[in-house]
Length: 193
Length: 398
Image (cartoon, rainbow over all chains, first blue to last red; front, side):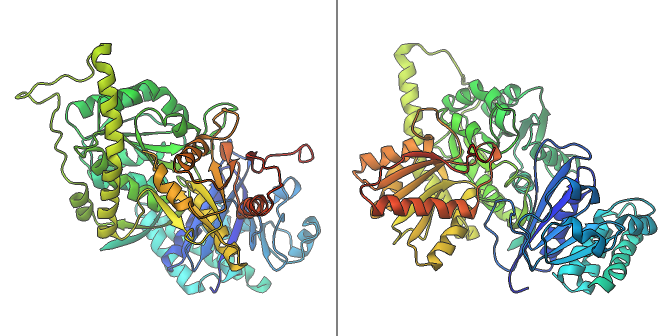
């Protein structure tokens, strides 16, 4: 990582976009990076559109504003494409990852003039297969790592296992499911990378 | 030894409180400071602290209980934000006038209305004349470092005043960033044991706190309080120096960032100072001689020291994250201009109001302000707007 990366997350209250941003900061911290993970706070309600942000950098991070020109946008809920300008300020050489069952070619017409890379991921399908429930944030988090190459994949897997083992010490049955969700995401995205 | 970690500002302050392990913490929750008492009560429940936690029914009570505990001889602190601080108002003055060396972890949030939960400095700035020492942080690291310095300043025999440790609500309190923590034993050594001297529960030497005083003595009490605030400057400087020597971080009254040869200087407090420093680096790369003075201590106000830094510059932007409704700028603007006048230093000055109620403040905003300063100081005929709002919606934006 020569220079930093700025990421903007779009999700709906309760889907875990903020948690995913904090988890990403966490795992990048473990690889020695400078990190920043924060949500934009408003009147929080389940289902309302929310935004969260990450700055990951080899240098100390001093800027405390929101991110207006991201390198990467993550859309955790496809229905936001109709109401939120998700590609606003997104760099032309940047990328967007969308949680949907559609192909990138079907999504691109909904992204205005955006010329950069478009990735899609059916996080629901992956989550249900791996965890038996719909938690989109684990697949979306691993999609960010797969797409950006922000760290080596095996390093990511190792760090995530350690963090799940710590977090779910009393619920070990959840660990394997989450690890499976990470791997399934990579398998699914591989052909788009 | 220091420990590399990542934490939010609230987590950092709660961790500092755990390490300080004060005797008493009364608290009442309010966004965005709620996590501080929440995390501290977790530490207590897990047996990691010995603090007596008192859940109270309002902020008026949390400050009253803090004062009561402190008067009894216990090292005491609380935390709050915004309307919580407003409800403490009466007690803030009682704490300071009774010379209680208690501590308040404040997470800055705007005051109503419109009803809004986001950051500005209207809560602590409104309390600037209550007799509390006020120290502000740029990020989680400074919130942590400042918290550890609070009791050594407050409890010094030349001070004996309450200390408010401020950080920006959400922007700092809820942002996870890298941080360097100190070892528990080093913190213990630095903060030291509390020896209250005179206190209520001292049966050998009974004293009274908070008595009625007629006009024949009240004014002397106020003057003594004012003297303590003046004297606190030397103590704040000494504690900051000790902290720097031991842990390698921190500033005294302010940070001077690329100011020594700067033609144009921005004075700013809190998280926005980080954004301003980034912008200064960008502008320096274009050959512009600009700098930032990040104010750490607002009370006592280091006016002479600030004027010294501004002596040779052409223009100054004073950034207020609150409105004073005096018709010409915020509280920082008034203080800095008074200090400049007193020291007979007369750069061009423009006062800016920014970031009210969480309005974002970006590096581009800083570029714009420095461009304006350059115009102001290079063109003597320009009519200078002395007070301007940054990032305000115009009719077209609506």
